[in-house]
Length: 333
Image (cartoon, rainbow, N blue to C red; front, side, top):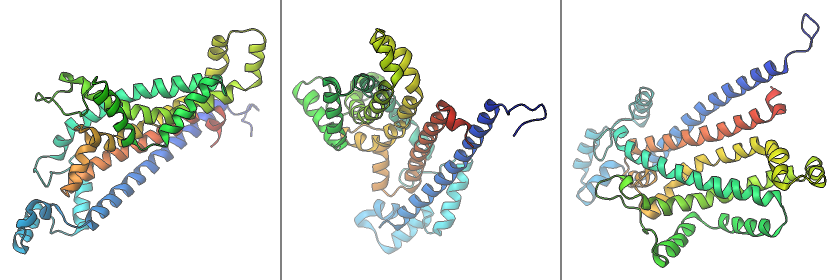
């Protein structure tokens, strides 16, 4: 359809409008998914046997003491009422108070959130080296010896559970080489800066597993681009391989590669649950397991909500970036 002047509509404006609608739809979906996750987690906690009162009293529990403690903690109220109160508090930035310690949940999560963020950031650097660097190297010379060796190693790692990878790293680097500590306990000062070496093994475990996943994605993307006729023609013309990679291959794959890297961010945060427990690292993952064991509902809800939001944003950002990098998808409404 043409405008008054008889010209075709501006594709850039159409693409921006389509992208804007796409982002708005994604934001709406993110909100709905977040609400659904919170409802599901709350329902599962309610269905689980026991509560904070039974966990706190233990063998000293009697019907009278349980009833009194549940009344004190607000657990005697209907579940739907407690959930709505929690939602109302979250909407105003109040995550409630821990049923175990009585401290504000926001204060409890501040330090573990920081530690998990530091761990994920260090692991992300490793992902760039292993996943992007290795993937580009293997994909650019697909079917070569290096490609076969790296692809086999990546497949082996991805076929192995995280905790097994972590235990292997402990055996090699902590027990055999004695280069790093086997556990990641905080020093008495409580500061990571005083013992940065406790971050090495948990960050390496996350980086190796996530990096191998990104490696396979990037390797496939680069291999497909390197097999295009213009790349082969450039090599036949005598242009150096490094220049062909920088001029003809990487510009074609930078968008999909960014999307592949971004999509791993939720894993680096959520996957820390297993890794932190394995190494005794005091982050969100370890706190989540402790809170579940103590049936500390407000703490569990807050951590799951935080991890869910990071995961949803990561996948949505990956989808948006893939559209931005692909002109055809960007122009499709």
